[in-house]
Length: 474
Picture 1: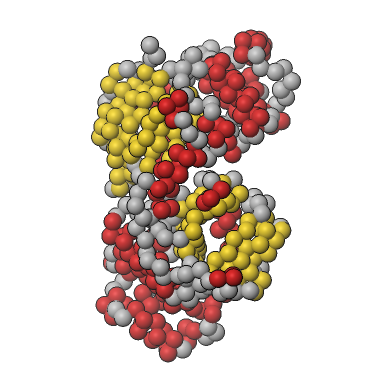
Picture 2 (picture 1 turned 30 degrees about the horizontal axis):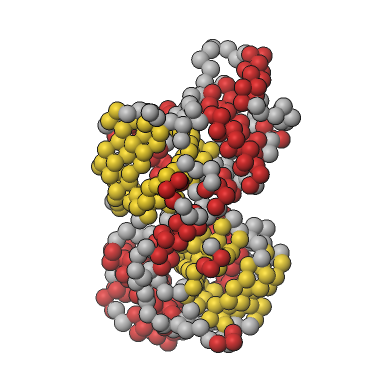
């Protein structure tokens, strides 16, 4: 019978005052490789922090090594027993490979590098690892760094190793070599792999769990699954009935009325992007890694240069070097939780909403007729009289969107619009996005939350490691 290393039953986790995980269940056994799929990259990060002992459960049961533990004691044990290997290597380039592997598990007072070299050679022989690896950390390939970190975890007697987003690091061939090594190690530990959309890595998993909206919604052995991972993820997207904004924007036949055309665009990270957006249309882009999201955003804000291809806004070539230029050329931006990041509490509501307009209208701040028209649009004298620091978050959220309703850019790019857990805030955000569409503004939602994809009406695309694919290609 396999030894149970970790069992979480009905776990709840908060971030601030918000409940992020409401019903988290997971069971890990020694000698198994488990895949785990998240519909929200933010939940994925918090989950890993919990397994590292940096975040505590506040409700539910947790068992470590088959014994129920108090939350603080469980966190202490997990800090000792869990290692994470991800896109950012934790190896120290200033010391040798052998020191990286053995130094932190060696209880001796003095270093013995001759002994470390001998132990490293013994490990290589035991696990059948090639001898042609470079001697210095800085010369290691991505695959070799992962192998050294696995050896370090093995030598430190870690019981659970999390492989986080390693498909973004390694080719299919390199992954094959890494999993061959894992097969030799797994008798001593359990491996947990955050799984993306790649069917080839699915073949390496012995079981899979799906975490959706803070709950474990699906757990299965691979032998019971009998379908490709992509089908599992599609089922995840379409499980819930759509809650749509309504048909505010409609596609126009034969490409007429396009407000945005992206033609074969590549940057240093993004590869060959092609899509269009019509007036009032909404496009949902689910991103699986932060680099893809930031590169997409910065391609429009001018912070990342376009190396190939062209972008057109209302048939005019779009070429900018900063965000001010981007706004003047017809692109608006709404960051995550804009009531915190985009509102200046030392300015009035009218002044906040008017900020983008000074890019469009020369002498805007000196002409009362302009500021008066904005005040009339807001239709809330009480709001203008109050200091914004005394106004609730819901009203501030509306202001963040209203500035673009007034400015009327051609498109607005919105980052993770529904991260706030408050139901009222989400409903206000939903209505404001609908108002942008009614004004004929094209809307692009960048979201790390899978569940959002089918709750909003509009075309869906998927952005992973710089490559953009359409829904039917998943």
